[in-house]
Picture 1 (cartoon, helix red, strand yellow):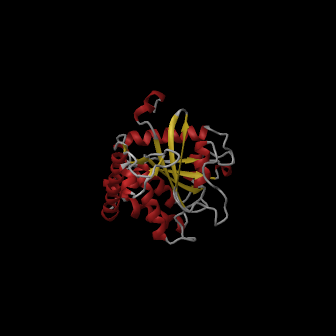
Picture 2 (cartoon, rainbow, N blue to C red):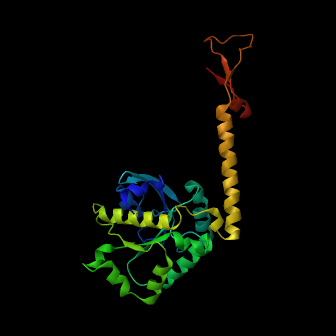
Picture 3 (cartoon, rainbow, N blue to C red):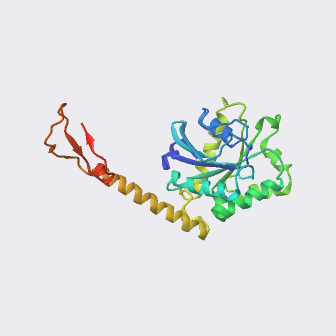
Length: 267
């Protein structure tokens, strides 16, 4: 994708997925070139809830959501799924790409279970919007990334073929290597072009999750409309009618919102 073609969407919206300890938060920090996400490996300090951070890549706005690990540690699987699905509302109308973060190496049974969980959450189309991001790129030791994948087990090779965005290697120990981030952006641009410049929409979700998502969107829209309506309402200045005037000459200021909340404001 040529540089002048990168303007087809203003903000790149990225969601990080993967196991606890896979390097999601570190990869998010490498992309944004700052310590936006906590990377403390103590169990009480790792990502417990979805967190959003914004920055730019080559003057392109980027928004990243870091998510809790999909392997069972301290939280029940259903709680983690609920938290991730709820966070999608921060990404309206949806992420352009899912970055599946995992260390360099052959697929483990836990990896395969996580892949099934992701597909159950987002639907089978999720892989059309996925780039695999391998961490610990420093372990390549001069080997070419394609050679490393070619010599890996069949399960990993087959899974990478399933993901339309392909794969990238990240060395999070070298945040100054911005070339790896530029290559990722190129991958994302190409993937968005393949997907008709669209993001991951509600219609792609499994029917059960789609109903929940549509309900969440409706509630969010109603809340936003109510907030906007209240902000448009004019202030009402009423004369102070107490027969005993305030000694400091204050007057009573009422607003529709203050009346609604049963609060009176004196100024």
